[in-house]
Image (cartoon, rainbow, N blue to C red):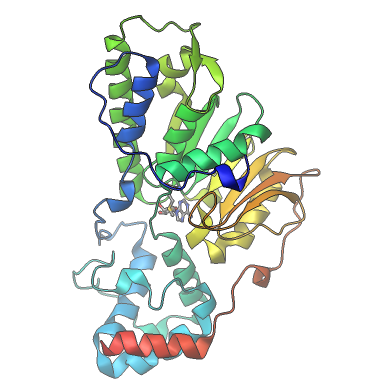
Length: 353
Ligand SMILES: C[S@@+](CC[C@H](N)C(=O)[O-])C[C@H]1O[C@@H](n2cnc3c(N)ncnc32)[C@H](O)[C@@H]1O
């Protein structure tokens, strides 16, 4: 497919009234997994056993400075060396609508003065990765059209940072992957993905029961991608989808044939991510990223799509080449170097408002 044939918007949504054919089931299933970008964001829980406790501690230290005008100069002084890992002007989670709980911090939480630059740097990297967004339906259709020619039949698809599960479920519906797996760090997003999966499978069962002709495991079935599979694809959908609640750096992707990463908020993580994928993926495996490239020598760039073609942001498709390697890439190659003075001027303005 070339860029002139990419879709540029979603088709109008026509609710499915009757299940006359499998295509009606697919349509209802796709409709059921849209809109996750608008989900209400809960604040992180402040409990003594929260896995986010170190994150909360530093968030509080920063927010305490944000709330006191007399501390603004110090806040800027501490953030300034880390502008390359900041997404936006000020960290979103400490702003009034952010995920940091409004409750008083726990006793023992340190003030910003007691938090090192290294800790702050790591915190900002984690913070940017927790921002949420989803690709639109037509963008994912473009994406799977682009990736299809490179895929072997079957194979395992993995979404690192899978959020509410839209890409994983879209992959499982669109192409004959043997398994589609999402890995998500945040508990509430993982749970929402599981809820969506339950809804998806309930709808699938209802659709299959309502078909005038029963779908059998060996009935030829044209998938939304145009690939012809068989009835097993829908009848055993649940067995092909899994969501794991974990840090993507702790989950081995050794068996994957396609790793999808919506990496637009992962700029500071790209080097670590590339090293992990080079260590674990077999030769031939595909990786796609958004916004940020992979520059590790173990990946060959197959396609690059400029913003506004396949998706609103750039998308890159890579293939793993060569034997397994522990070779790493240098930290700074991926970090953008923004204009620090311009950042500070914007930050002062935001703080002033
Ligand atoms: C931009 S969203 C993309 C969601 C999904 N992949 C999609 O495209 O619809 C990125 C997700 O990555 C998750 N995330 C960030 N850091 C992570 C980590 N270390 N391990 C697993 N998930 C992570 C965030 O919580 C967020 O839900």
